[in-house]
Image (tube, rainbow, N blue to C red; front, side, top):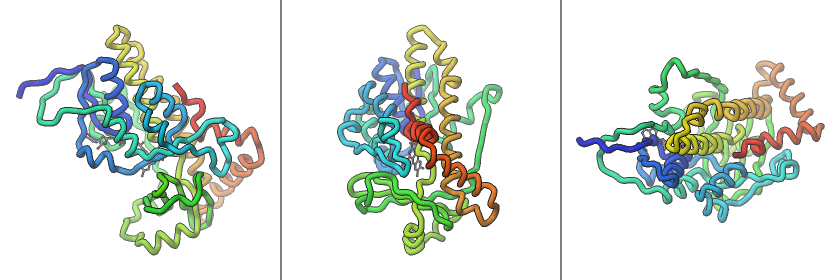
Length: 315
Ligand SMILES: Cc1cc2nc3c(=O)[nH]c(=O)nc-3n(C[C@H](O)[C@H](O)[C@H](O)COP(=O)(O)OP(=O)(O)OC[C@H]3O[C@@H](n4cnc5c(N)ncnc54)[C@H](O)[C@@H]3O)c2cc1C
């Protein structure tokens, strides 16, 4: 089979891959986008829904956020009222709508091809194969297991509150998050690896009535966009004769990655501390001390709000 030559092969049509592919095309850099699943599948796969304001403005500035800005409701409230402190908002726009928008801007060719390229952009997600091709000598793998299961379900039910509903209960947590006017996402805490079969509808309903807390900090889709913006700009600089941004790509991305990992861990500890209290009171007491500081100190609340809304992540 004759090989097709291109500059960048992007693997994966999630938010990261689609943003990179669209931005390269706009910059006039040749590329192909490779996706394992069908278009219909990726346009329907439900995942995240909260996009930080800097990411929305970043998409808008790059000509990729028109429908999002026109359609997405804004959330300014959480238990900690972060909207008042930062002046910024979460845009509530389900993952699959963003993917649909970005796919509509980018139409790829079908059929079977052999491709030769200068670069492969591995945007195939946390379990993708491309990470296996990273050179061992320049790769550091870091891993953290939260030891918790977070089943999420989407219900065809209008949200009963505008903001994220949260509460902490000795039996764990549950979450209520608006997705669209007719759809709400609910999450629950389970033991790690607990099979779906152990959670029949009746048990889910019973537990959701008991407790409501968001599982973690909703950062993944935002980080994917951050990385995509930086990578696309680094490729543009490279093809304009400056390879420094490409060489510095990891160093430029990693501070925000670790900032968000730290915040997610911190928030998760607070959300899950009641469930662990019976086994070991130490983490529970630490989490309660953090919660008291958060609720008692406007300065601590302001820092929390900035981290939650991702205020200082902007490009
Ligand atoms: C249930 C759930 C809820 C979430 N909630 C939130 C939230 O509220 N806020 C938030 O910010 N983040 C959230 N996240 C995380 C967020 O969805 C991810 O961080 C984000 O999708 C990462 O984007 P990505 O483009 O890097 O990867 P992905 O979205 O995972 O896309 C990777 C793509 O690569 C494709 N692919 C994989 N292997 C191959 C292959 N061999 N060849 C070709 N294509 C391949 C996949 O099919 C997929 O389309 C949630 C995730 C889940 C699972």
